[in-house]
Image 1 (cartoon, rainbow, N blue to C red):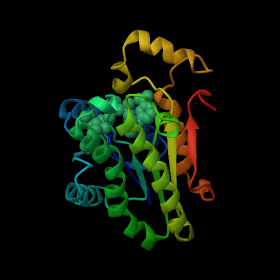
Image 2: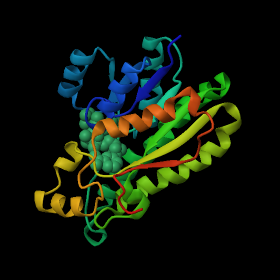
Image 3: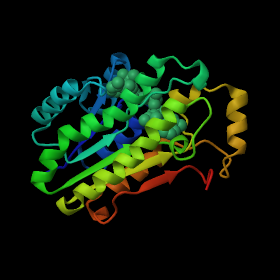
Amino acid sequence: MKKIALVTGGTRGIGSGITKALHSAGYSVAANYNSDSTTAAKFHEETGIPVFSWDVSDYEACERGVTQVCEQLGGTVDILVNNAGITRDSMLHKMDVSLWAKVINTNLNSVFNMSRVVIPAMREKKFGRIINMSSVNGVKGQAGQTNYSAAKSGIIGFTKALALESANKGITVNAIAPGYISTDMTDAIRDDIKAKIVETIPSGRFGRIEEIAHGVLFLADEKSSFVTGITLNINGGQYL
Ligand code: NDP
């Protein structure tokens, strides 16, 4: 029977690349999204991959969403990719408390919510893969992103702790820390700032969505069973 993979924020950007790569590799895949139903419908039409809308920062919504996915795909979640994320940049002295809360809830509390919902079935099955999307800016910190850097750094701590709890249950828990990847999120960066960022990347370019998806395929693989608690940097050699 095909393993079931669920990707949050899986209908556009990095998530859509991950969803498509898992689908091509033979997994039964579901893609979650939040509110962009036009993009999600187009993605579904093009790929045939089922799409499900819920807000990953809402615990009860995650419970309902996972139940719906399991009913439709006919099993429990074997591979969870916690990919959904947002940025709301501001220097701390100007940061409204709502920007702090929104980024922590969407990027970090979501990882608790989704992992908490799927892990009992993984423990029972004695198999699971949880892959959490961190960021180079969680590893090194970034001015204007205290909220985002805190969330993405928190994900690394969560990943290590859950990896320790789960290692003897056949469940691996790993993080990926992408460098700058061309998506809607980074399209929002001003061109002159983008040029400055590229100067700091030894590979001399932004990364591609497929390069992150490739890392997910590696961590999701059954044969990667001895890899747990790591943060896989995929960043063109930036800030080593
Ligand atoms: P995009 O902005 O292109 O896509 C974000 C996705 O997350 C969308 O599908 C969006 O849904 C979904 N999402 C946002 N909020 C929620 C929510 N509350 N509930 C459910 N889904 C939600 O982002 P990227 O593809 O660029 O980034 C993907 C991940 O990779 C993020 O965690 C990001 O922080 C991380 N990352 C990205 C980097 C980059 O350079 N792009 C670098 C390092 C890390 P909808 O379509 O409905 O809006």
